Amino acid sequence: MAGQRRPHGELKQAIRDYLTKHNGPASISEIKADIAPQLGQSPDSSYRSALQDERYFERVRRGVFQLRAGS
Image (cartoon, helix red, strand yellow):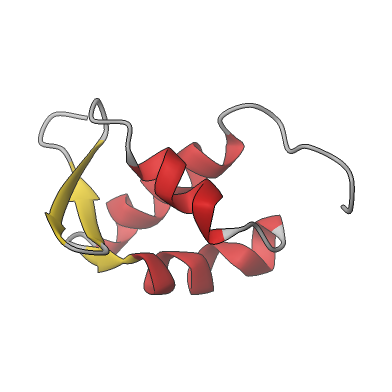
């Protein structure tokens, strides 16, 4: 996948799916470990960027996020 961009929103949707099935807060490293086999490697900055979307995610503490209620 070198040099190619993934489809818009794919990483964010994969994170939402993971947090839905995980059913609770998770660290970026836990999220990344689960998603990487399906989507391939992405830089940490891509995960941090996706998790900044406050419509879907809320920060529990540094590096740990959960789904926002009602998302």
